[in-house]
Length: 132
Image (cartoon, rainbow, N blue to C red; front, side, top):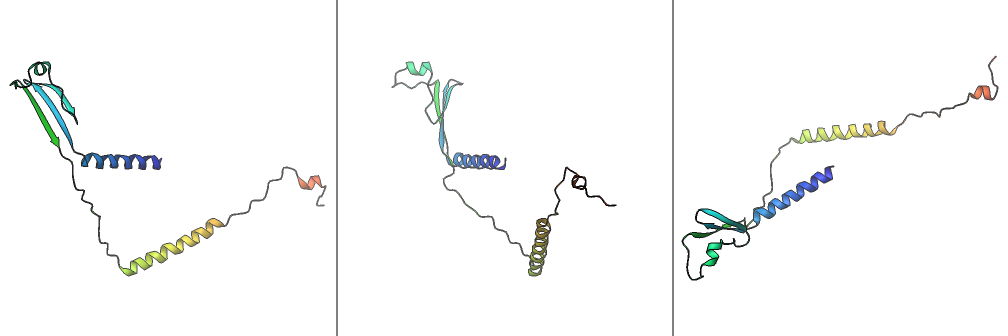
């Protein structure tokens, strides 16, 4: 379960870096006040009225807008640095305390109690050994 979550998180972070550094254009074509087409990474399609006009005439009713969305060109890599001043005595005490408790815990965990096997027959009756 943790590996799936870590893969999803790493993929989402990689996509975040990709889309934050990518530049793209958004083209929009207006015919009057009505938006006819909006396209990303390609020119917007024009309306039928604009296509019928000769190329040397410019129409006043149609308008093309081109929005350029710039991504981040330079990534600023920074390392998180923080200073944690711990007294030398506290570090030595915690090292001795935690290292000694782990050794005793391992010894206690390694010793197992012997459980004898269960016999399904009464051996005293089987061998006819009785105390008189």
